Length: 482
Ligand code: ADP
Ligand code: MG
Image: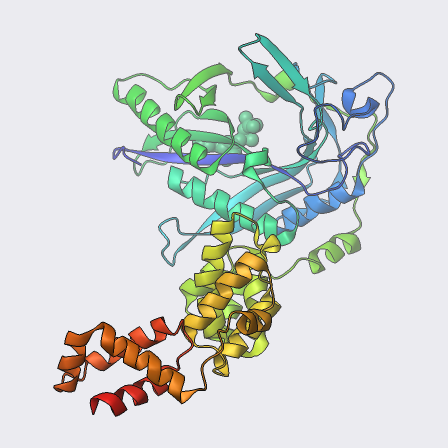
């Protein structure tokens, strides 16, 4: 934060879509990308008399999310109606939870935002279930607004933190970590581009070192990590300006305009009475059996911090590499499948963090759809270990695997990438290299032996990786008297 005399106090309310096939209260598909208003029924359209049923899978996913955040799950849940008027809210109220939420009092250890070793503990105040709203699509050209209710009723978990974050960068680091935890738990895919994660950010300033918190404002509907950071920077600067000019910060809700990079006052901060929360008479309170909660807990996978620690212990990887390899569960699975294939963990880590990640990024696909499966890479690394292909040869085979999806053995055979076993052939490559660089060849013959490495490199290049560097070096010595 830029303002030295003030320090920021930040708390986030994060809405994440839970991964389920159907919506929270009806059987419509909880799916992104369908033509507008095709996943709708009387329940999510809010037609009179339609009766909701709670999706057990959504509750389970909410429990997974809560447990992944170290929360205590409340065995007795109730659903409430939160009333407000908005065109994408067909019932005129949102089904959410108020006084008996799904879970409370969690905490997560967020890796330091500067990439250092430190962690910051952020307490989770509560996690509750609620239904998503529809979407309004503004078409300023045609001066109309359309409503798409496909999203209405998709299950959300709202995660509310305590005000434990002290800077916009920390807020961002928390969100990155939250996304990772939920992805590991399998509770949510948290696809920001699809509106799978939306954030309201609360921020206040206090004099540095002073205990008393200032008045907070809330920034609404931030939908990217960068947006959260940018909006908080802007709001902190605005509040600091108000305070320095001797003014007072009004408690208000601001709507962030990402295009203009500024917030606009939306309304004064509503208190909860304004929403007229009422118990939902159509939804009975739920009792969760403790044994069921424990079964969900037992089904959670190893979480990222534990997994990174195990990768360090089991494979003797540097902690920095383990941290990157555990950034997603898919990547960690991929690495372990390769590492267990026999090539050795260091070699596996080098390939996964190097060629694999670069190729996945270039292909712009999720790792799960990446052509080169771990089992293929295991075979390639075995070919490399046995000396069937050279290191540069292996990288060429890998590039072909990425392009074609063919098996490494097939590529080696088809492209003639196997290491040459033919001494005469290696000799011809050496002659070619010497002829191409006559001046260097002269100096090598005159005793400048450090040029040998240069020529071996040339031979490997000319041979397309097929020459064994040791054989090339022997042939070079034989010709230059080294
Ligand atoms: P509301 O019910 O009005 O949304 P809550 O007390 O539930 O208010 O808090 C909502 C969010 O505001 C939480 O994420 C909390 O951490 C955050 N918050 C509370 N006090 C402050 C403060 N002084 N400064 C910044 N954020 C705060
Ligand atoms: Mg709130």
